[in-house]
Image (tube, rainbow, N blue to C red):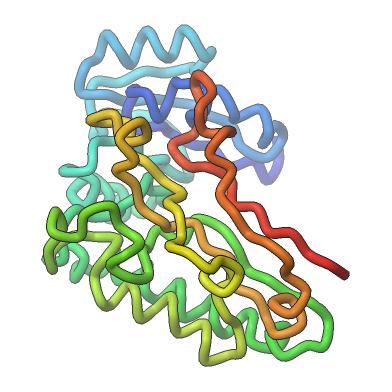
Length: 255
């Protein structure tokens, strides 16, 4: 098929195979993306996952997949401690990279060129939305920014340090700089109390213990903010079996 992106998957864990994960949802990209290979340090797991999802080839290492498979891009679903190492290896081979968050585990790794791309992306986003931000019609940019804007947006900031992703000053500055083009964050303005979390790690029962972070943000221009009547996190949607580790952020508008 012409113009179909041939993708390799690195990692066969839950983020790859669970109902909310990558592979069960690839049908949304049918005709545009084709998964042609999967690799895992446990070859038997890679093979089992390949059989389950009808992936043509399975490998026991990233290098083996990159050496043997004809792929355009790699989706990196490895554990956080090896995100930076594996991402660099993928980019060094000239492949496009879709990296599971965070791209690096420490600020030292964040200083590497591949992670600097994240900060440059926020700068590019700012430039891309500048014209619409000044429009007279309501306009918003929303999603998983993967950054907690302030210390209160983390369940226990003492558990983090200057080397922790999500809370580094560089990341926070890059996101809040959206205010320089006329956008404001909606949720803190809409609520008269502490802003709730939107993300809870599955490890250590993060959701039941409310060990979360607020990293899903809504930035709107002045007409959008003026139309907001309420904003909240739909925690009920997070309670179901096999749900995402994020909860939806809801914004009610009066237009």
